Amino acid sequence: MVTNHASRDTLHETAAGFWQTLPQPIIGLSPMDGVTDAAFRLTVARQGPPDITFTEFTSVGDVCRGPEHLLSTFTYSEEERPVVAQLYGKHPDLFYLAAHVVCELGFDGLDINMGCPSKNVASSGSGAALIKTPDLAHAIMRAARQGILDWANGHTLTQAGLKASRADLIRAMNVKRHGQPSPPRRVIPLSVKTRLGYDSVVVENWIGHLLEEQPAVISVHGRTLQQMYRGEADWQAIERAATIVRGTPTLLLGNGDVQSMDDVVRRVRESKVHGVLVGRGALGSPWFFRKKELARQAARDGAPIIAGSLDETLSLADRFRVMVEHARLFEGIDRAARFPHIRKHLGWYCKGFPHAAAMRARMVRASSSADVERIVAEHLASDPLAGAASAAMSSPALPTSLSCA
Image (cartoon, rainbow, N blue to C red; front, side):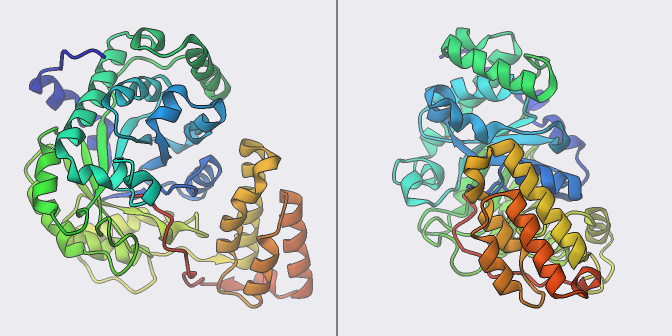
């Protein structure tokens, strides 16, 4: 691994990248393991794109030397930009190599997961466990940044230490996406997604540690690792983090329990964050971000808002149309054999209308997009008024173990 680090002046110049061009408050889609796959992200982009999108988190070991199919988490569309690749792990050398891959694949940024509370991840010393090892967290951030800088300065994947077969695979992924084997060389920004602490809130010390490495963005989920997704997100602690970051080149995004655009506006006003990442609130509602410009203006001007006025409502027929399109996209991107992986999404679409539970029970057994179309057609046939019904859908009861930060 190359060890000659860039100067602080260079880091100041390159750290922010596209982040500084985004309108504030930033309203983005949070990374969620097993959820924010390529088909879901593209569906969201086409229904009303967020300001920023992240991939599912991917192990640096899998990126550098895992089976080829594990790189499918890095499949993305040009329609999603700006799109950031999220990595997790505990070995700085692998972060250095994986940063080359992220750059070579043309991502707009690289995000390090320091917030996943999953037992399998945290017990290995990765994810939120890095909160307990700040020196290792620093080493990982430096290694990733050095990988970004070395790639921008001309390093090839094989020069960095990756096998030629892996380099060929990356080139093939690029050609498939946009017809070119490699993107232009550029420095992309480094960011971190984390939590308030490990088993207690240590946000002041922890955010201070992260700021020493001057990431472009720190995103904070308002719970500790020990809390997992239980209880309410602590936005007062997120507000304290925003206070610490204020006056530095780093942006602070808040995350946790954001179920509506009203919530986005309220959290920005109260906590003074630079933006909000939305996770479970967008599940079953890929059109969540359609009115983000109205929400952004409301957050800025402080005027009273009418409850629900910032949230998009769709007729049942339109909701079903989006669900079918999502199923077709998944089938085309992730292969028909993997179709069961989309069933959770299909279930989340089925909420807030008559006989939704019965339809959901059928959707979670669907094996193809044709099955989805058939179930929708049969539902509409059984209720002729359903196609014209306009429904302001209520939030579904969602599992509590989706997002990994």
